[in-house]
Amino acid sequence: MATQPATITVKASDALLIIDLQNDFLPGGALGIPSSYQVIEPINRYTQYFERSQATIILSRDWHPEEHCSFIQQNGPWPPHCIQNTQGAQISADFAWPTQAWLVSKATSVEKDAYSAFDGTELSVQMKHCGIKRLFICGLATDYCVLQSTLDALANGFECYLLTDGIDAVNVNEHDGQQAIEKMCAHGATPIQWQTLAPLA
Ligand code: VGL
Ligand code: ZN
Image (tube, rainbow, N blue to C red; front, side, top):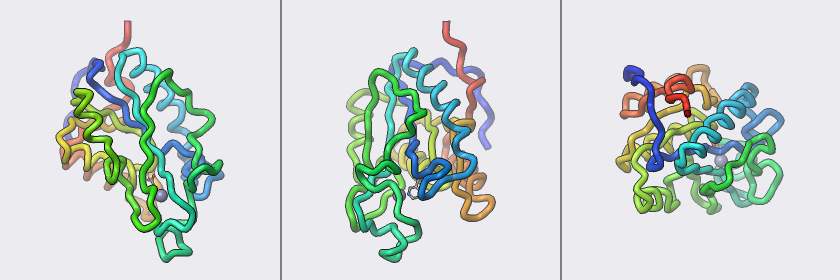
């Protein structure tokens, strides 16, 4: 695993990517991760910090049509979840929205699943257009959408920081989340936590 950097000062050319903070991945949701509610408070803190630093804030959402190919009924791996315009697909009501944010919907067509926020979206092009160089990543789930989004971000040339106190894993197998973190770091992501960010004036 990469060593932790000294403090990091967030700049206007940085972006915070909050992955799939949706009701269906939270306790009580169709694919609810029992421990996932704990990420909301740190993510709210990061959101406020990045907003105050004038960085870009990006939210992705899993946004499936009914009868999506990833659903068990269509021989996919998952129970129906994050169906467009349903309560389960809504971003948590406990998320403290910043004044401005980008919203990226993914896995929106029936016949194709996409775990990555870069898969089938314009996100990479839009980030490059805006001069974004560094991406700070948090959200759900570590072993699926956080993993694939981070690998794609690295492949697209973005410098990636994984906010390890703002992620949680489905853990179909016990160590999936830990293995996903190791994989992201092996590909060049740097794991950091709240304490790594320089205090704001
Ligand atoms: C996700 C499983 C199925 C995720 C999305 O957001 O990590 N996981 N669809
Ligand atoms: Zn999904």
